[in-house]
Length: 64
Image 1 (spheres, rainbow, N blue to C red):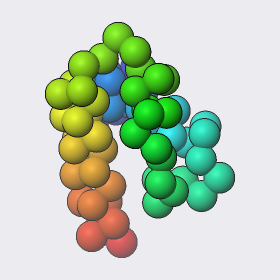
Image 2: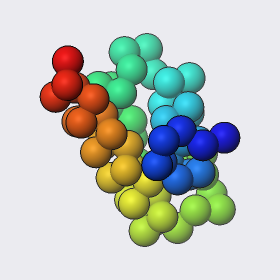
Image 3: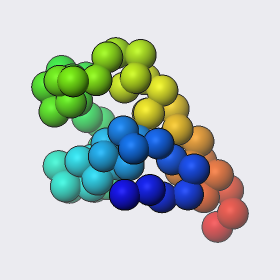
Image 4: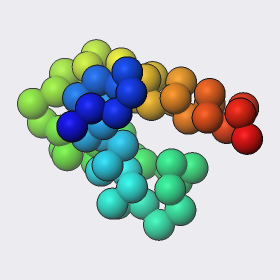
């Protein structure tokens, strides 16, 4: 699945957050849970994917 310019891992993390969170992206997701949910991804890959998500969310909120 591809959404806009988001990478595959960013999409997977976004879907995971949506599934695991009761309040959406504004919920705090513990780092250890994120790492456990994506064991094949490096810390750098997770950080980059989260930065992608953060950029998209910030951009979307600024247009509202």
